[in-house]
Image 1 (spheres, rainbow, N blue to C red):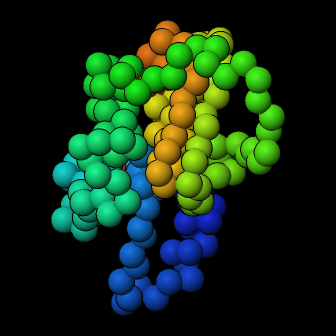
Image 2: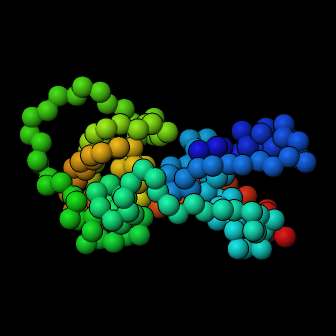
Length: 175
């Protein structure tokens, strides 16, 4: 979730003879400020950039079982396996009476974990911020249980859309 300006400051403050390790999840939301630096750095792997051979993707999730629950749901969202994420979808209108005890935006929740997460998506599928990355970030905030309330067409459109911000970094790193 690092933006271009902060990355530039970090690199200028880092000794060039030292190793810089940037852990993160490239599939989560990009920074609010300009650029999607971390995601772009990960995308350069194998494209003839100076980062070829230096990007390491960890595949074992220590948080979730990839074959059930949140692990299966979040993976199916990222891989657009509609049959799987439809199975986990909440029925529209399931919650008729509820009260907010603690609420925050998905963006604000990034980096945090909660035992239970409820994600309420709007009825309008044309909301620009509804993207695969937003849903993935929301779902992976839960430790043990997540409920997603959305209509089928809103959920399908959300999984179909990707964030389209580009930092230009990938092109500049090509050798």
